[in-house]
Amino acid sequence: MQPPKITRADGVPLTPQKKALRLLLLLAVIALSLWLVTVRERAAELGQYGYPGIVLINAMASGTVLIPMPGVIVTYTLGGVFNPLLVGLAAAAGAALGELSGYVAGVSGRAVVENMHLYDRLLERMRRHTRATVLVLVIMAAIPNPAFDLVGIAAGTLRVPLPRFFLSAFAGNLVKMLAFAYAGAYSFSWLLPAG
Image: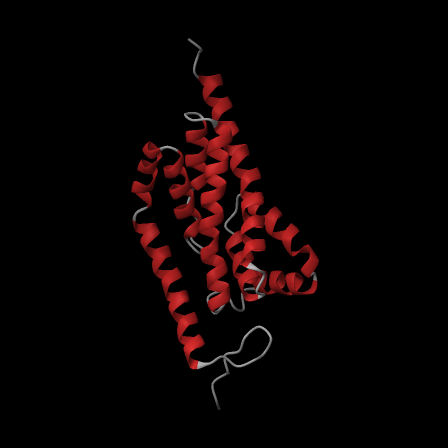
């Protein structure tokens, strides 16, 4: 019995160089995810660097594939400290950057999630309804859940253009992060007396 051939999404066999590159990309995403899990306790310290720190925190929180990290908690907290509009924008930019790790995992190979029922259903629906892909990306990014990693992997597998993926992830994350930043701002002003 011969091993299965690795092919592109359109069925064309990959060259050995492309196979090696995809394997390296997948290993890099896995290594990044493992490293981010080990430094997550120190990630909150980046908040002292203001808005660039917020971008980094959320990029790290969203950069782990299938391992949830609570970037929204930091966004909520810092929304009560800094301008919540700017916190939401910075957090969304960081989260969209971090979501690229799932997309890259999908481009390089989907073996990590193959045969997962939810992933298989999602991939099939995205494949059948290509016009709705952007809407799916925006909605799933706006909902605080770790399932967006599966959506990102599916988008990479289907070769959704990178700018379309990034802008969709940014738009959805913007809705989510603004909600958390403003919730933080209003809850802190409600809890702490003026003056």
